[in-house]
Image (cartoon, rainbow, N blue to C red):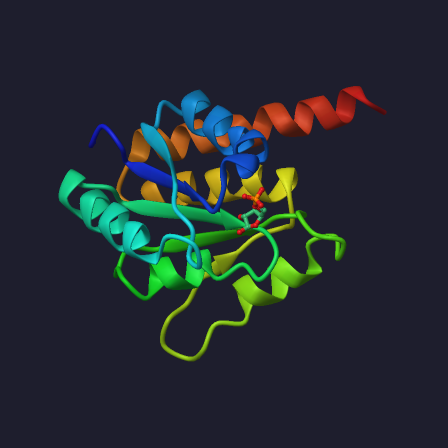
Length: 159
Ligand code: RP5
């Protein structure tokens, strides 16, 4: 696999803390990732160059996270045929509903796989990325099965 199998792109440095949840999960699965900051609105050219670099680096999945009118995931999806997972963030006074709608409501032909708002979404984005990568990778698939087993055990312990 590449040195940056998953690219995590955030719209601002202020999104980094939430998106550490993605990094943690990817690390747990031994999937390499890199995090970069580029804004759909403030630095659109940088978005293009970071996506281009990811393509050259052999990246397989991009996770894009932003708050407010969150067009980052869509802007990334417009520039690549890689699967793009969008994480809507709770950054404004609207609690992330603004970002959710901006991320999920893509026009026909350019999908963004949109997950939950905030930290749960950051975690789920990473799990979904691993699930995508596990297609044709039996070792990763086995790790996912083990992950689910441990999760179920921890739920049962709470009873
Ligand atoms: C969005 O605006 C970013 O993704 C971030 O969630 C939010 C606030 O950004 P900063 O003003 O903190 O840079 O574009």
